[in-house]
Image 1 (cartoon, rainbow, N blue to C red):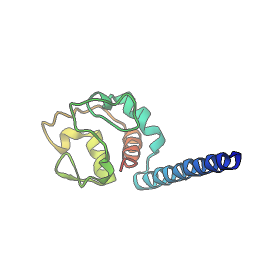
Image 2: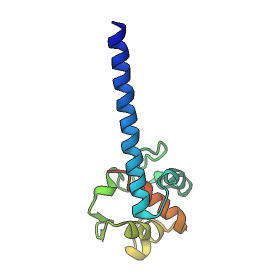
Image 3: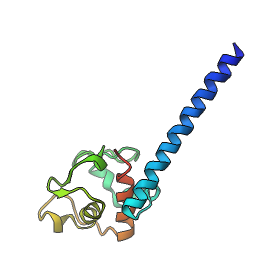
Length: 127
């Protein structure tokens, strides 16, 4: 009985470590794609108040319903319904939504280039 319990615990641990490895791989890939640090993204999202309008997975305070939920944003073909989804375009949209689509309800928030890259890197982990 004890052996089966130990074996089950080891299997759970191996699964958890495997998930951590997958997450780390996704974070590394997002960093390379965007030039940002995805681990800094949630804090930047909090500072700029993105979660007051958007629901964003893995960001506890991001439960807004004004803008679209950002679940799976990395897999979407377009941003704002017209801008091809690429890291540079996402950075541009985050920093200057009014330049991309005049009159959009997404406000200019004064997002720095570094913060925009970190936010983009984090959002690129959401598949």
